[in-house]
Image (cartoon, rainbow, N blue to C red; front, side):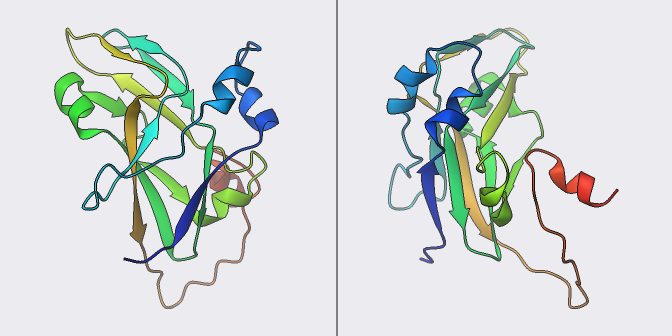
Length: 165
């Protein structure tokens, strides 16, 4: 196996800035770094930092408190946990989350948020703080022979759109 990345917590200031209340200080200490469940698992489980319940059609954006330092040439792809997708049609709002290696150095410290929606017709899903709800898989990628990009990231979600304007 290639060892190409490391998970870290973002700073407490960055994490707490994602919340409207002062309760983040308690949950910051309880943030769990993503882990694989078994030696054969490709996905690293991401754990919720809050308790939440989603009725059909409802969504939520979860600040994970996590960032990933990723070697160049690799990307972290985020998906809902298989069981939650199968049982509840839990979906990421952008279908698949793409965490680029340069996101680590962005203004928000590379803080990974996961926005999910319950797409079921009739099932309510409840997740407790500390429970796995998403998974991340590292994948290698290539670039074209004539690639000449030189722009640098300096932002969070959708920030590469600003580079191309």
